[in-house]
Image (tube, rainbow, N blue to C red; front, side, top):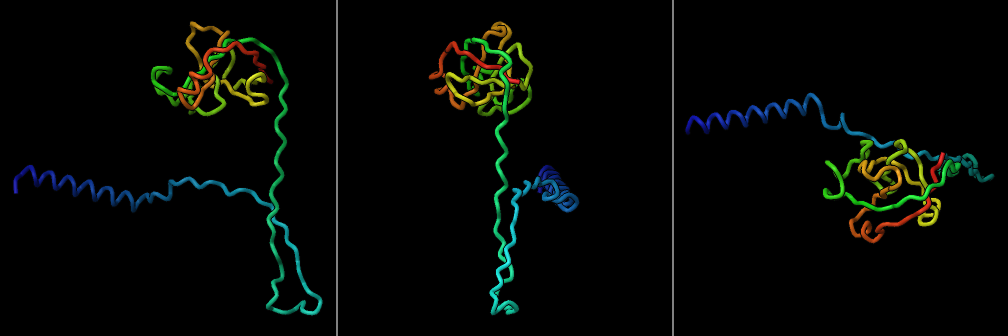
Length: 175
């Protein structure tokens, strides 16, 4: 057995022992994030037949879950209406800077994200002509050469972005 082989074997053994000790000291389930259970109201109904009210074979209660009421949709007030040149982009390196899946505000891209200059992050926008009551949120920026008269909608695929093309649309900036 060569000296290099023994050193390599010793290193593997030490790393394995360290990993084993790490698992014992800090089990992986201690770091697992548990998703909260959905809230369900329960309603208890007692079913007691008159002639067998004290019989141990008949269940005393039947539990029926009642779904929680759906909260009302938020009501927004239109602060401004502007006409913008609207384009679309997707998460490809040639259309974005750095990480194509992270916006300028640090959030991950998702449906409903808009890149726009001249308004603060978190500004809510509607495009009623094309999307009806769907609310978009400004979480990304465009190149400064476009100023505040253009906006970019994030789309899942490049084909969707190409199909959108360049459009002049009226947008409602909400409060």
